Length: 145
Image (cartoon, rainbow, N blue to C red; front, side):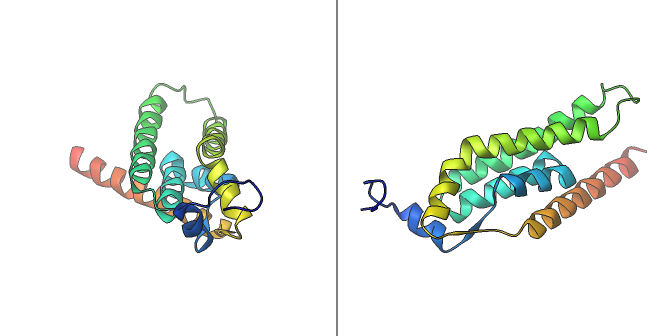
């Protein structure tokens, strides 16, 4: 039984202490550098690390769908709109989504002595995700051209 809340500790609580989870700021950074897919990847890893594989798969799927929606929407955004006017609100939205769906899990993780994952690693995930997206788009362009 958890001494502070009166609730029974779950196996998920035990799992989270032994791993590092990404917080809202990390999701913001990854999304800013690598699209909503990168933010979704970090959220999926959080779920995977806490023994929630079904939720992890959903986070991957939602991240990918968010990337597709962003790409489609970008076709209709006027060229005179600066990129940061689109990217920053998307990154903020992903951080809010993280807080809403994983905030309690992260609080429990920290309460039980768990640690946060590196923000530098989150930045690296964002950069690598953007690189992968660019490579895929270049391959598509070379085939279509």
